[in-house]
Every structure is written in C-alpha cells, then in structure tokens.
Image (cartoon, rainbow, N blue to C red):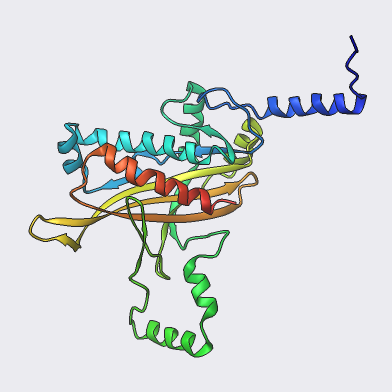
Length: 275
C-alpha cells in the first residue's frame, strides 16, 4: 500500500486553516458550527426603549398580559435578526437567554450608552440620495424654495414588500441613536470578545396611525412597526445608523403573524445596510 505524501507547506496550511476555524467557532450557544465571517456583538434594546400603543389589542388577541408582548417581541426579534446575519457574521448575542457573564456585559453596555435623535447614516446611498443626484440645478433650487416656504415635497409613496410596506424615508427622517457615554466600554469589550462590530438595537416602536384609515367601517388603521439601530466598528466609530419602518394593518393582532410577516423583512433590510 502506498503511503500518502503531503508536502510540508501544504500540511502547515491545513493546520493553520484548522486553527482559524477554531478561533472563529460559534460562541453564541446556538449550536455547533464554524464561520469565516467577522464577529459581531448584538445588543438588544433597553426594556424602556420599547414604545407601543398596540399592546392591549395584541395581548387580548393572544390571551397574554400586556407586559409579555414586549418580552416576546424583544427576544423574537433578537433571534430572527441573529439568523439573518449568521451567514455573514459570527454573532455574539447578549440577551436574556445568554450565560450570566453575557448578562453582566449587557448591563455594562446599558450603563455606558445614551441616546440622541439624528439623521440616518448609511454606508450605501438611499433611493432619496440617488434621486437627488439625478436632479437638475433648477429642480434642486425649486426644492430649496419649497423647503423655505414650508411646502412638503417629500414622496408619499411606499415600497411594497411581503407582509406590508416600507415607509419611504425623507429629508426630515430622524432615528433614535445609541451614543457611547463611556468611551472605555468599546475597547474593553473588543479586547474581551475580539469582535469587529457592535450592533445596537436602539428602539422598537409600534404606532397606530389613526390618520391613515384602511377600513373606516371596521376601524382598521395603518400601524407602523419601527426598528432603530446603530452599528459601531471595533474602534468605536459609527458606521451605520438608521430606522426601518414597516406598515401593517391594525386588525393584525396575532403575535405569531406579526413576527412572521414583519421581523424577517426588517432583519433582511438591516442585513443589506451593513458593510
């Protein structure tokens, strides 16, 4: 029987590759597996950064206490977003189901961050930016004059998606940003976890738009499901910050339907916006 001969340089490459795999091993507790993606720490929103005027209706439909709606949404979105990002990043989830050490780090993040309303920051141009770049000087001048006259010329169109419609952003759009109040938190966590990014889910909002009636007879209105998020790199520099708003009817109150039709769509949009 012939002996298998492996050149030394190839053997070392295989060993090195195996070491890389071991360093990138999934540490989220979500099962075995290896990834070559960059490592991302996912920080869910603070409990009081959940705003909703729909929880009473949702709780009644699902026979839950209203306080449980927030808990279900918070943990479910964390899971759905992790699954959406997993093909590109190694995810470290600092959530309620994490080990005790992770929970302590989550609280450390909460104690070291603040909030502010700012204009979105994206690494890719938005449709508004693209449309603006195509405008002539005269069109841009008319827009500026309309702005001074307080005339709203922003588009009222919505982009259809499965499970609802995205609300079109405009120049007045502001998102709820996570700010770093303790600059030591980023280098400390980065050294501990050797991660490349910090993704903060800043706020979740559910707002009934009584000015957008779908069916007056049945008192069915549009609801806005908004998710605010901020991405920082390992040096603590903000890379992305945005809010995604999805519309769905107020007569959709089954919690599993809301999660199934909305969370995956929002998570996919967040994934597309990351570098």
